[in-house]
Length: 357
Image 1 (cartoon, helix red, strand yellow):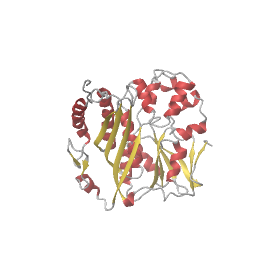
Image 2 (cartoon, helix red, strand yellow):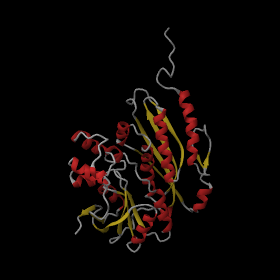
Image 3 (tube, one colour):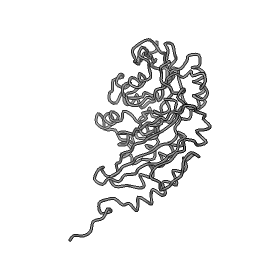
Image 4 (spheres, one colour):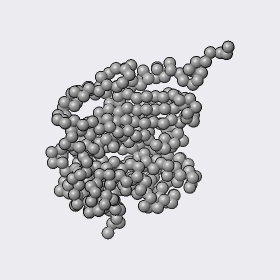
């Protein structure tokens, strides 16, 4: 009879994992609000629907909103740089930004992290980013799963998924159905690439070219290429929800699109009525230098850039033109860069990019 085989021999150390998770729960409490029912060893995260936060909102017909997403191949850049403290922010942003464009307020977030052999230093950095993202979004990190999967991932690599749940009063759900010809289009700036298009980014940087992530292109003003592409996705929850509260009764914000994979051409039409189109005037907003760099380094055709990347626009708002200037001012006071970039026209659910005349 051979030597007894244990789970540790198979590559899974449940004792070490248990100690890590005990510390993780203590850290997660930084994100809790009074609606969280604290059960450190519970099988599920519990959130009181009748909690003080929900009563304060006075929703008569509450609707739950839910989103899930990951960070995609941006993680490959994190692996290359051995920098893991910001992709957790990306993880929260990818779900929360989808959630808030419906008008929903984030309530709680769940995460899933999987590695071949758990590196607790890396997982701790990931958790640090997730907690930072939840605090930016104003939601609780209610729970998650950290999976050790020997033989499944190369050493030092991992994958992540996130799940966000929010709430909105049914009459306040933003659908885009009331978008009219002549409405103004407002762009809220992105921080850069966010978390989409990284398969093309990596092809341009490492296949079409042989750039080092330590390379400092002059147009970046001293920032390295790695730092630029790894900038975390901006989380718009607090400024956007502040704006929606301000115009809750007037309902002048008719549609909001989160500009993620597929860029302007695929995301904006999702909020348009069948017979509406949007014209966006090129040059009416600030485009971060990373996009020019990628376009020239590829080279990548201009049309392809708009179909893959956000091109410096994180959110698109369609609003009543009478209120557009005030909305831009409010967003700027909230710390966001915002620009009036176009108009709604007659068309077939499309985005037209026009040059400045």
